[in-house]
Length: 251
Image (cartoon, rainbow, N blue to C red):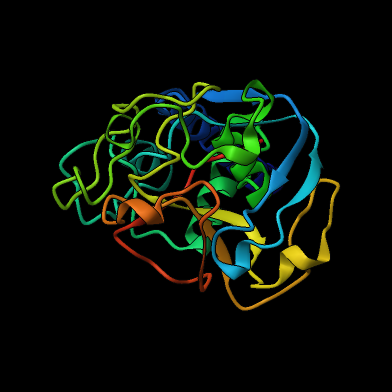
């Protein structure tokens, strides 16, 4: 009987230790601020810009939430234990040097720790939120994530001085979301296709069923002014890493 009880006791002790470790990790997680975005119709894309943003077409999105800020170095370290960023001088700078696959690994671990259902935004959700959602009546006219001068809403090549900056230090857009223009480019969940918009998937579009690269939205601290528009699309391989590239959460 004692030989049988010993493995059971050890198993229960191990489960208890794991539970305590998860509880401790959860209590140490820096806060993740999410913004509710009411769904609605908007014009995705821009006929006056690059071919992969055409044709502009109306899509319908359901309600969702999106991170008020880009995921920071501090939040990454709290979940993953090690900071991959090249610029490690501030805890609240957006984490960089993380691939799409790294971001998914972070989200999976974060969901285990918190019991939440975080994910990456679709590119349609990202653009809708950047444009101001239903709070901004002229969403098809939006160039940047906010109504103010570019200098006041974004870190980009003209003012960033060759490095990323702490999140939330520029003016938020109409929804209260920060840094969707500039600071770091952001991974989206969709596979990239340069002609995907011609398919006109109008209800909660999720992107192509497969592909080679993943969609990246927004510009970075190293981008010129014309490359930080809310309609800008870029493509990176899922395992690509860059000092210009990070992400924000959705749910």
